[in-house]
Length: 116
Image (cartoon, rainbow, N blue to C red):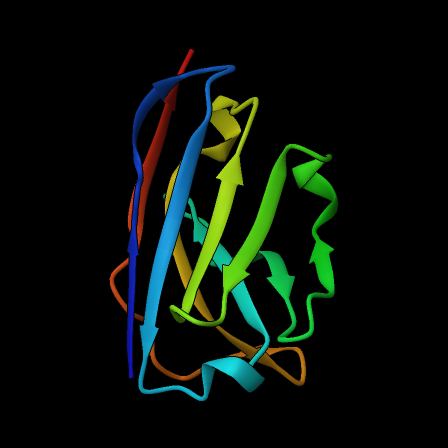
């Protein structure tokens, strides 16, 4: 299994980023995929999920600012981050999401840092 997240960076509050995740070694076309994040000193948390059929779910803290999407032909999942705040600073990861649990393997995440 390989889950490679990219697209993070240093931005100012209010700006946007688009994260990408390339997945391999998973049955992508049948998997629900999720984005997760881990801020310093905090536990990793779920951000958003998207089923293979296109059903999307978001955590309340995204408040309509984030958009998850996927390209099954490319085994890619994306997360558009808009109106970023300092509180969104974290390492962002993608993973499969089944039975309310992430997959066992965690790939390298991508750092998002938002300055005020």
